[in-house]
Image (cartoon, rainbow, N blue to C red; front, side, top):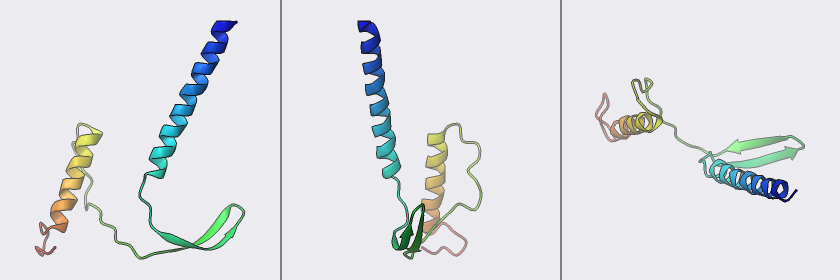
Length: 90
């Protein structure tokens, strides 16, 4: 009986750690700023602030891993916004 209680306690703590980890990373993402104009149960009407978005014109291909692909994609966008584009403009 004691081993079962310890097992349940360990699983409970593990679940709590996983939830905290997920919560941290979900809340750490960047999202556009907005003001809530109207709120009702299950719905909000939002006014989003002006923002800029940049994306690569073609997908990153041939990446051997997620880290390599995100590095290559970031490098491509960084070079583009710093002048490596058709008009050589920053």
